[in-house]
Amino acid sequence: MRISLTSVFVEDPVEAHAFYTEVLGFRSKEFVPDAQLAVVVSPEDPDGTALLLEPRGDSFAKSYQESVYNAGLPIIVFGADDVQAERSKLESKGITFRDDLAKPDWGLQNIFEDTFGNLIMLHG
Image (cartoon, rainbow, N blue to C red; front, side):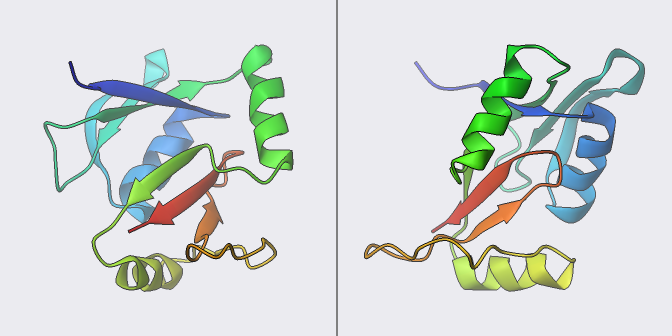
């Protein structure tokens, strides 16, 4: 068994699709704007796990997303072979990493906001 698809709640899947593809560099796997359907994959593993940009609406997902965000917890963790190089690349595209979070003993947090209500951790 393997993970083929997971999701992250976003305020607007169409706008999130643009951010996740144009800024973060993911590739579009499925995109039907009229249906609010946006699925992206890593360009490094296009047949690997896909990420559904799930519309949150005003459902339970909004409360969940806001609670996780307010607790300072990342909703998802993205991996990179060279975290510092990836971080620099993202910063050059306007991503601001949060420095207000405590740095644990095991490494840097490398947390940034996706601008759609989520904190994301970059991990190596």
